[in-house]
Amino acid sequence: MKVLMFGWEFPPHISGGLGTACYGLTKGLSLNGVDVAFVMPKASGDEDPTYVKVINASDVEVDIRNSYQYIQNPNVSYLQVNSKLIPYIGLDDYYNVVNQLDSGLFNDHHADGKRRYIFTSGYGSNLMQEVARYAEVAAEIAKQEQFDIIHAHDWLTYRAGIAAKQVSGKPLVVHIHATEYDRSGENNRNDIVYNMEREGMMAADAVCAVSNLTRQIVIEKYGIPAEKVFTLHNAVVPNPTKHAFARNVDEKIVTFLGRVTFQKGPIYFVETAKMVLDRDPNVRFVLAGDGDMMSAVINRVAELGISDRFHFTGFLRGTDIDKMFGMSDVYVMPSISEPFGISPLEAMQSKVPVIISKQSGVSEVLQYAIKVDFWDINAMADAIYGILHYPSLYHLLSKKGQTEANNLKWENVAKRLKFIYEKFV
Image 1 (cartoon, rainbow, N blue to C red):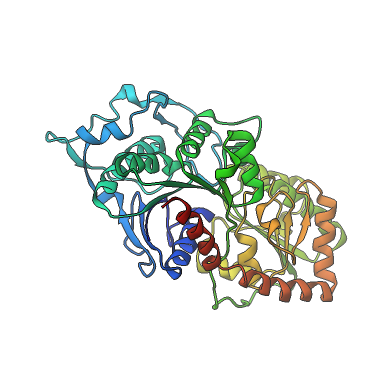
Image 2 (tube, rainbow, N blue to C red):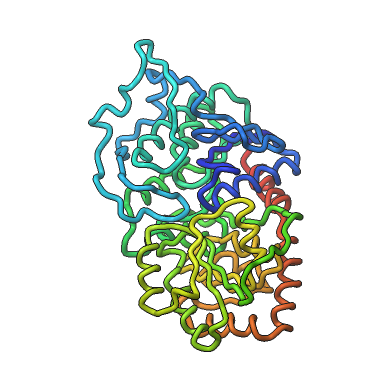
């Protein structure tokens, strides 16, 4: 079986869990005898080609005179949103929405009608323009490649998946890693993105959601028939090189790693830190990440008078994440809404006890993690204090948690995905 898969990022250059999940899934499919051609807007050339064929959309020449028919939709306007949009994270502080259909979005081409689009490989101010152009390229790729089924990850690639389906007539699977309700909340929904998400789900033959929590949102908030929505929990990529790292402080270290945005609940982490430090001042808290709430978090840390116990590392990736987990005694994920959450699994691989919110998809698959409501900072503080001061609890969560995380394999996830593919091929 051959799959034409559309994504927006792929390791080693990633901005969150989406790229990590794409890598794990393609590797798992390969181990199940499925060939994957993975299309991304701009490949860097250092992607691991062992388990997947990477197609660089920036290298594909399209004939705009023909490709336009596959992406035209009278109900969709293509917009410029001047903010750094992250598909997994949010649409905070966007402004200056411009209708690009009226500004010549599709008129930038050579005299013969053929051209290449050079994508920026990110989430910049022309993101919506690149989403539209990516769909054009997808139509061209679908003409050239041989495949049995199409798989598109998150809303940025749904238009591409639809275009490939229109060209080829092959079935389409869309993968929901996060919804607009996760990113922006119930009352701040961005209808532009919501409509693109719903369009992709309605056009798909099957919808894969990363948790039962996300599956319910898809059914209830988007009106997608339940019989075509499948739960496909994430897993974690094995990392046998993980080990403890030397640190220059004697105190215990409690870590938050993720985007510093409303969805991830960083303020609850700060409030919890204050409660723990009131009971035990010999603890250090690390916030590893970046995002739109960074200034608010820093100000709150200062207001609470815990600046000398708090550290900000900025965004981490690769071996820096391994090093951070290797120095940590507890990992906390207080997400307000988390479709899944791979980082707790990565922490558990390093034998770090984890505390996660009950509002996360990963809580559905973990037994050896402490689960609390994101807003319950008293319970969160008690959990942190207990892990740090009761060695038997620490060692139980450390040992059992590592075993549990290592048993969540992408190969098994991909086996279920292959079964879903076979329903439609």
